[in-house]
Structure formats: C-alpha cells, structure tokens
View 1: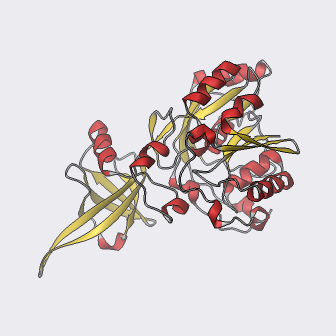
View 2 (view 1 turned 30 degrees about the vertical axis):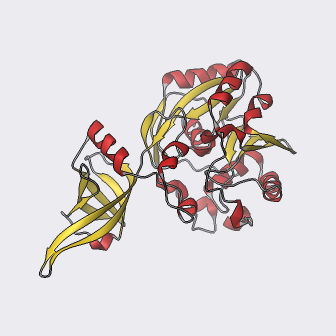
View 3 (view 1 turned 45 degrees about the vertical axis):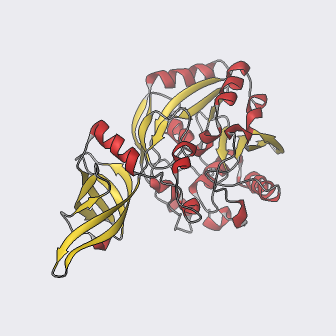
Length: 348
C-alpha cells in the first residue's frame, strides 16, 4: 500500500479559512454505498434513523499559541527576543511540551514572558521540543492562558491568516468540556442548537467520549509504504456509561456513528477485544485499508488532506476506489476542505 495511492489534486481555493455561518448551513456530501448525494448539515437527521447513536468528542481546545519575549542583559544593555510557543501536551512532571520558534534564542533556565500574568521557564530540550514550566497552575493557569493565548489554527489556515478572537468561538465545539486538545475535532464544529434540536426530534441518541487531539494530527506521512508509518499517541477516555450506551445501541439494532475521526479512533481503540468496554489511556491506533471495525457503522467527517492518515482511515471504512470517487465529486462540486470546510456522511 503506497502513499501515492492516497494522493489527489486539490485546488488551493477550496481550503476554507472561515467556517459556514450558521454552523449547520455547511454542505454535507452523503456517500451511501455507491451513491453520492449533495445535502446540507442541517438535514443530517433525514439521513439517520430513530435509535441511531452519534458519538461526540467533548475535548476542549486550549488557546495553545503564545507570543512572548525573552529578556537578557548584555554589554550593550538589555536585549529582548520575540518567541512564539505552541503548547503540545502537559507532562507528568508538571511541565508542558511545546514548540518554540526560534528555539535557539532561548537558553535552559531562561524565562519567557507571555503576559503580565503568564511566564514560563525553559527546563529542557529533547527531540526538537521544549519543556516549559509555567509560573501558574490549575485554574489560574487556565484563565491566564485564555487571556494570552490564541487558537492553534491548523498550518494550512495559519499560512493564510493569523488566528483572531472569532476563532476562540469558531474553533470550539458547542459541547467542549475537558480542556487538553491543541486541535479541534472539526466534524463537530458543524453542530449548533438548531441541529441538536432536530436530532433530538428524530430520536437520535448522543454519547460523549474524550480524546485530546494533539498537534501530531497534522504530521505528514513520510514513508512510501504506509503500513510502516508510526502514529502519534493521544490521550483518551471512554467511560463505563458511554461504552454501555454504545453496546445497548448495537444490541437494539441501531447504528453507531462517530462524529469525526478522533471519536472513531477512540471507540475502536476501546473495542480492540471485539466489543467496546470502558477504556482510558494513550492510543496510537492507525486505521488504514484492511482494518476490521468493531463498533463503527458510519462516520461523519470533514474532507482530509492528500496523503494523510485520515484519508487512509476513511478509505478503510468505505474502500479506496469509492473514496477516490467521493473526493473527485467533492472537488468537482467545489466542497470546502479541511478544518473549517464542509462535511461528509460516509455510510458503507
């Protein structure tokens, strides 16, 4: 299985830099078997059945991008350097793994000041990552970060425009609860109150799980034989209640439909034994064609990057040839791609 099998031509102007407004007015491509239908997200309930269950990732994106300054005294007087930090994940020892730009401008033990309230000291560097210890913890850290930080927009949006205040709302799901992600579960960004009411009226059930999406979700695949690719690990939890709800839906003949690849990867991680059970830990599950799905009956997801692990995941669910046709239709019909783009409902 070659990396080139998952390539396609994407016109640059199809990359969305802002979401649809209202959220549920985004377009929805429905691929059911070999049929492809153009629809709208607000009409999602029409494609679902009473007794179906959507699985939603309730992670909360932190404003992980920080701009600060490092200060030094030199023979010429005080000097400062601008430093950009992107937080990756908290460590067991209380530090944060982060990417610093430029890393070489900061020495071990030096302080970077991000705001009047928030600063951090560089404790160590390993594998190109910095490990920062902040001056605040707990709720104090969260509120200072909320004030000083910007949303960590994906590289393909950040290359076109900087993050702004709108992104603090736009790049967060309406049910975001547990802080820790540095990227949004983007299929869930299409849900608003109008859609939630329509789903309830249709008799569609909801289950929440948590997977803290890491920056590694944007890492390119660099090996030509995709089966040798090593996935990044992300922390997730499926509660006993969530797993019981999913088992009950399966037993009653309803379909289990994760919203987003993060929710799918998590519930399949929790079902490696064949049936879903309560689960917590780091998952580096890599889903590509040939994978056996134990829980997932369909998937709602956005349109993914060429040569990405997420394109491999949807190809595993639907089949490579079918996904090539779906993406060819999406490009020809000018669907908007990636995190702020349109959605697809994939029903094998």
